[in-house]
Length: 78
View (tube, rainbow, N blue to C red):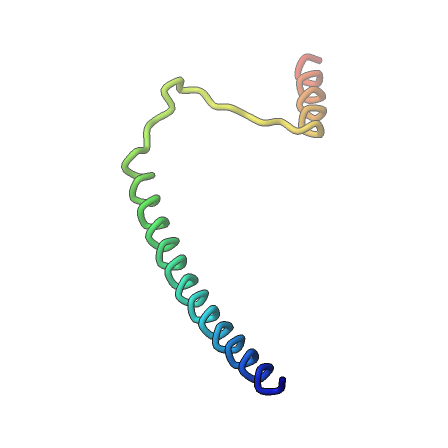
């Protein structure tokens, strides 16, 4: 029984080390891919930039800004 347990522990440890090295290799590969994507997206972004065809600007206004804008409009009318 002890021999079987010892063998099981050795196999488990071996599998664990193998899995660790595989994960480490995958991390390196994902890092390399991420670096390539950043380089590619930067190049593509600059190459595909286009002017706003409508020549207008969109604006997002929060509630607090909306109140201030309305007050300023009222003050300008007065």
